[in-house]
Length: 334
Image 1 (cartoon, one colour):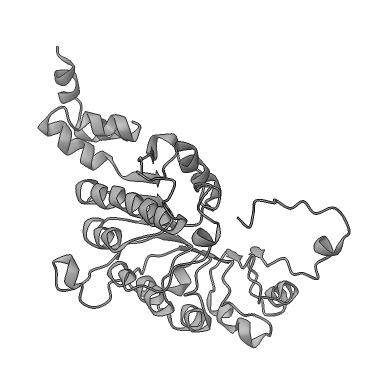
Image 2: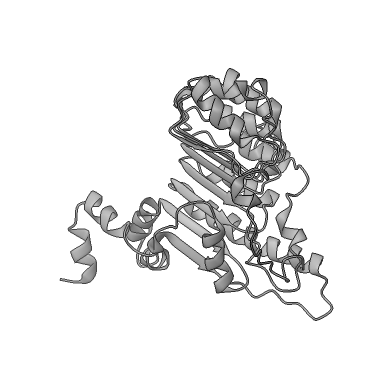
């Protein structure tokens, strides 16, 4: 019996279970062997983590930099792409070339493999309109999305940290992902956006407050929201999240880390937290305008009773006020 015949006698659900354990490269190769196997490999590819950097070590570092759990090796695609450049290539131009190559990879993968994807993580330096439109059009079953664009250790030595640490200016490209208004460049009259998310992680993104709350309002099964270095997290968004979002009681994990527009210095500033009745994890780590001692006190006095409350480490904390040697990386500012 030929190998193909041995596969053909397996029940479809058993074959899909077997294929789900293959590494991404092997699964894609399997899909090229025949028309039936091509269909099966589409159904089996439900989880994908893509790290696209010029060096493979940078792709691995991007996973370590990310706040998300380290993915299974079977679901990881670490890609490298040579970027032609000369010694006269400016850091800004080189940075733009890297971002384009990163987005070219994902925007080419989604039209072919996004239809059945349920979990997608994209580690890069930024997102471009081609990728935003591909997400809006070709990932209808996506449940868990991570877009992580903060990887200070995954960069060429000539690219300064300043180019990859601060979010880009607000962009209309997020309208397609959030499902806001017409999308003239996408070939359809209305931007459907993502509507089936259960978990959402955004790191160093240029999404605005309105775009963010619209995206969340379209995903009524969202239970985990992780936002880091996100300027769209402001008072307007937090008030809406804690008082007006119809499905806020389904939220169990909320992490708002290193968000400069979050201010909690009085009990009134924290009123929105009272509306999140079922939150089990709340992190406000590295938020400079949030009082950690106040959060800890209110968690008891206002009966939030959040079991896993992570306040920021304020400058007057005993941990930071102790004397000692502070090691500084001399290359940090370069």
